[in-house]
Image (tube, rainbow, N blue to C red; front, side, top):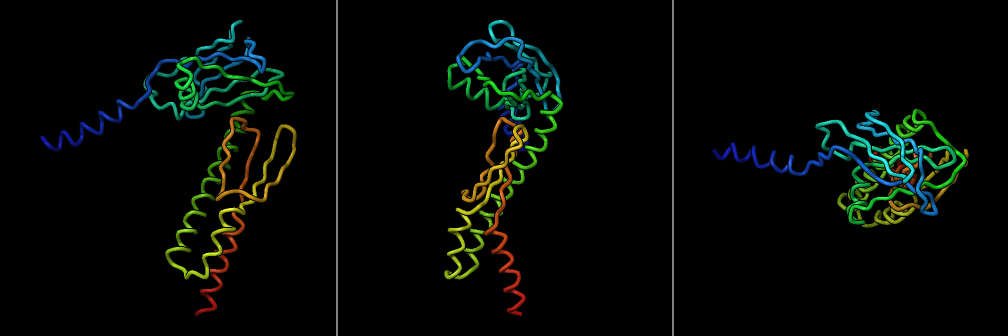
Length: 223
């Protein structure tokens, strides 16, 4: 009986935490808070389009989700309209915002020359997510290295931590305008998540790389 309870309790908690609503609804407006009609809305589950619709004259839309898909973290809503900045929004994040505003959820689309197609957005989203994952790994490696310095090395090596925390060069590539920006300082390795998949951030842990090269060659010399 004890074993049965041990199995049932975790299962109950898992299913109780599922967000199994059947649709996702919102209102889309421009920067002046005017409703936007004919915005193309695509609902994606795990990167695949499952349904699509357009906003009405009041800027309202509602897209249905597949039965049994209970994790909004895996679901995205893509918004495109000619003359406006396309958006890729995560359902989980948007539901949190709606809860903060007592269910009245509004999405703002800003004017912009670009007008990516849904296929291009999906391709860019894959590239964008890859580099976000890469940047997260940079942060993890930096944190691991800092622990290594404090736990393994002598105090004279602690000075590595300050530049390792502060100097993480970031390159930002805007595939829309083809502009490239560089930033020398960055704390640990910022993933810099954004709902604009045509903007790619790449973080390079220069100090961490130099540190491990030093450790490698220092060990060789010590032998």
